[in-house]
Length: 298
Ligand code: UTP
Image (cartoon, helix red, strand yellow):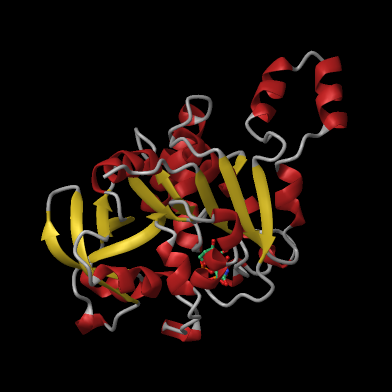
């Protein structure tokens, strides 16, 4: 079987980000900054490392800061050049996208993740594609999507990133029903979005990285409402899982941070801050002092 290369990725960024109100009243969640780079930059870098060439953003009203972020900024670049700030010019390079490499489609109503992905159907056509949720930030030696692309080249079909969660947390995620556990790759026979605590088929939760076949778009065409009245991507993938060899889970190697939640965002900020050579010492000793002060106060 010849497996088509994955060169397109969809970034659904049309959600309202209500958990970060009031900040998200005027700032898209994906522009919020982890150390010194917006969340979306981490997702774009991961996609590039995995060989993605076409970047499709599903946006909504109020997200223009995202479009500007990936555009050239002639005034800023010329000011930096004049000031001899070559290092900063280099940093800006990652934010520039080639003409035509990036496309924007609108989701005019937040009807769920499945609906957001479906909005990109014409740009996807008849090709496999990746989906990356920028609020899931993954620290990994080899970027998560690259690990998945390598696994997908062996399996074909649809592949979702999976992570073990404590049983009481499963109802916050899409959960896998596993037919066969092959180590890092799992054969999946079903998926349930936000199951009730005692009805989760496993403790393997789906997180925001997917490689999908165009058939998922056909399934999404049905516009079937699922959990929370939303059109769920999980349901469209689950439809395929009834046939063996069509859906796989992938246990990625790395640490995932849920930057869509306040606690997750703060954890990521600490972890990424401490992993940066230019910040590690100062920030690390500040955290140690803070902990010592707290212990003394107890
Ligand atoms: P979330 O469930 O985190 O929703 O969406 P949200 O609106 O971003 O945030 P909260 O829960 O209100 O705080 C997961 C991903 O799916 C996208 C979001 O932008 C996010 O990247 N999404 C969700 C859409 O693009 N459209 C939708 O209708 C729903």
